[in-house]
Length: 342
Image (cartoon, rainbow, N blue to C red):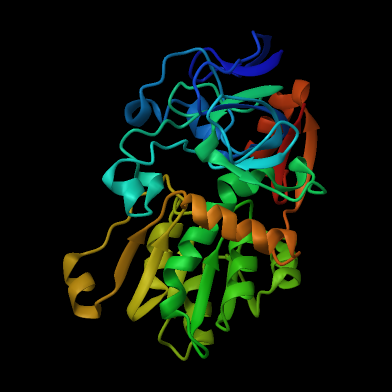
């Protein structure tokens, strides 16, 4: 089969011929990939930024946002059968550790992370995963239309869901970045809250899309965005800021946009937040980290997606065009999400 393989950092992945995966364990599931999301994290992986955290052995197949159809199942699999349409939680988990028992399966101590940790990911024709990662979908669902919800989607949904108690009617949520993750976060906020939604982005097309997806107001990131947000909030700042960028200065601007007693949710990464501790204690602002959500949150998100409440704006590429998709994403030429379709 064809697979997008990373052989060395700071070099483009190549599309190689590799053996198809097969079931070996009782809970194994092989999925025929119908769509694999192309994520900014893939760009960071190629640059070696995840090497210290994951220590993957090269080469391996990248791709951590995957959906498709069940191709083969192990002897103990009961939740899906061959032919089922599925989206895959990005981290197959053990179900037995303290984190899994507490419903915090993204913190499973025995999980693997296909596409990041050296385990082969889904930018391929087939992917080996586990029964615990499979969320069964309506058979009419096209995997290419939902694949990026597997990681970008639940990351955005997870952050919004955590903040729900803070976002009662009359509050303001700011979304920094209306791109691949942010455009999903806007829709989650519109579907789950009655908050005023202010979206900040430097791209006019992204702001236009944000308005279509539920933003109440939009702000151009032209260097005056902090003041603009404060003007829209009576000088106070937002109750919750969701930073889907968190680099190139956005991280410090995001904290500055947060009102006293408010919460700054960090979803993007790459920058360095510099905050005097006196500012933290004197204003009682919270800084909240967010990573991929839980299996249940992915299932909840798919309810919204299948009801049309959350939709992905995508640009499809054939698997052989993986390098072009990655290049377009890096150049800012993709509005929404790029999807590889084998």
